[in-house]
Structures are given as C-alpha cells and as structure tokens.
Length: 122
Length: 110
Image (cartoon, rainbow over all chains, first blue to last red; front, top):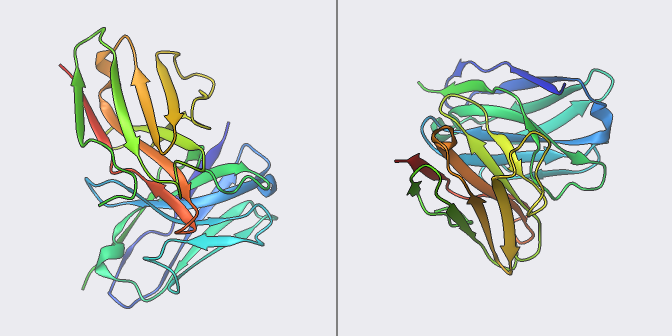
C-alpha cells in the first residue's frame, strides 16, 4: 500500500524559511516522479512543484519559482520542499503526491498524502 | 481564475447522470492527458480518472472520463448520495511548464 506522510508544517513569520518533508513507503520511491500540491482552507488545489524520479528535472509554479526548492533522497525514500521568503499567501495545506513512473513526468499525481499545514503569519 | 475552467457547482438526483466539464486550451487539455480527482471535506484528493478515461482499480465504473479537443468531461451515472464531493480536473500546461488544476466543482446530490 502506498503511504505518503508529510511533516514539518508549522507557523512561520513572513520572510521566514521552512522545510517540509514527505516520507514514502509501499512502492519503489526511486522509480516515481513526485509532486507537491497545496490547498488553502476551503479553496481549490494549486500545484507547486514536481521532481523527476532521479532528481534530475524539476518544475515549479510561477508563484513559487525562485523561492521554493524541491529535492529528494532516494536512499531515504524522502521528498522535501524548502520554502524561503515565505509570504502570507503561501499559507496552505501542503500535499505530497506520487506521480507517474520514470519519463512520464508531464502528468498529474496519482496517490496523495494527508498534508502538512503551513501557516505564514506575523 | 483557474487555467482550466470548471463549473463551480453541479447537482443531480439519485440515479441521475451528471457531467462536469473541464475547458482548457491547446497548451494543456488539447495536448496533454487529463486526470480527475474526487475530494471529500477534510480529506486528501483521490484519483478518479487518469489518462483522460482510465479508472484506477477500485473506482466504480459509474465514473467515466472523456476528452475532445481542448475540453474534457467527467460523467457520473447512477448518482449516489456518497458522490457528494468536490471534483477537480488537472493537466500539464506546456506554455506554463507546470501542472494546472481546474477550480473545482462541488457536486450536490439532491
């Protein structure tokens, strides 16, 4: 069974930094592209970033480009999102989600974690 | 204003067939595959349809997806009360170089 468990979400002040993590299990993590998707309370889904199975390719939403960095450690079956220069509008539930395998990166996620809440407020 | 346009709400009575549209452009739906997700309040989204019209195992065949040009649709037949949820479409956008979601459709079973 695919399991994705996010952690690291806390309250942080505007301009601050935070790293959220996702621990994956139940599948061969190193074979899959991985996404971050966020959702404001009561609002829709907003895609944040995707990283390729080998970490060699990354894409970002314009709203976070230059501020957020996605990375992964295939030895630890873990996905990370480093968030810098945080803004109030970055406050959201951040989901880790498994994409398709290998070179099929240009598709949506298939399996989702339960999310970790990031609050940016002074 | 989402890149993919969905109606904000839809409704139907039990047993009815309802469709939810997802309108995009040649840079997204017109070129790339569409996924559909179902989300209940307080829970994570769940993949309902992938690659335009394929159902993951465990998804009832009451749910079906289709795509024509730059538009996609999700159809739910034999509507049930437990189908009340939010539904989102998603596709890659080659111009934005990112994944885009529709704004979501809240389905009510009357």
